[in-house]
Amino acid sequence: MNDGGTSIRVVIADDQPLLRHSLAAVINANHDMTVVGEAGTGDEVVGLSAELRPDVVLMDIRMPGTDGIAATRRVTTGAGTGSVKVIVLTMFELDEYVRAALHAGASGFLLKDSHPDALLDAIRRTHRGESPFAPKVLTRMIEAYIAQPARAQPARAQPARLDALTARETEVLTLVGHGLSNDEIAARLTISIKTVKTHIGNLLSKLQARDRAHLVIAAYEGDLVHSAR
Image (cartoon, rainbow, N blue to C red; front, side):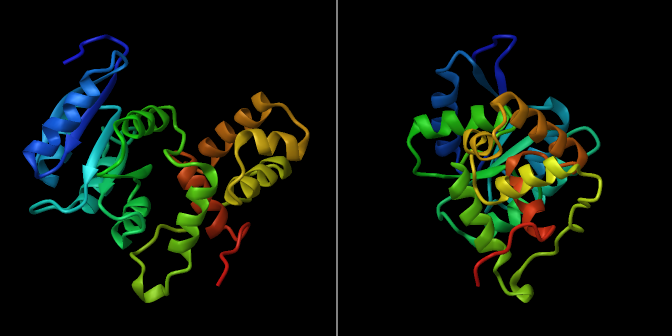
């Protein structure tokens, strides 16, 4: 393992040892990240997250016992693990479990057949608090989730309260919800990239959102953006 002091610390959770070891080999070959633990079940990854406090967990959905969705919820809401970010591993791009995992607190998902460079980029982006997806891809994915019939959706948290936002922050949140990148938001509002990043940081804090994915969800659930039906 790479034991550099500034490495992104990663835990891999998957019930297939060969896949875990393959992912670990790819990750540990990079100087800026290291695998600090591996788990084969949901209960194991919850325990490892509490013990090791990693920066990022790669979470398989279908594992024995506690599945990846329940494990994600326990990790992201745990007293000592709330800052841990989760990337869900899946075989299917718009699997219903992925959408459930987002509402359980996951920061995004990664296809198991993704190129190694995509894996590394997703880990770095997630560690920085960004989405692993291009903004418009993220928006389409969440729109598909929001558009589901209510009976098919997992239980959701209460929509974020938006009344504490300034008018400018509301504008920025709306544009995030529409899938605009930071550069596009800056151009649309005629402000600097630095100012956009400041507004994004304020939104994350005020809405208690983990990352950009959850800002998009907040924009939809706050009726700033409406899904096409």
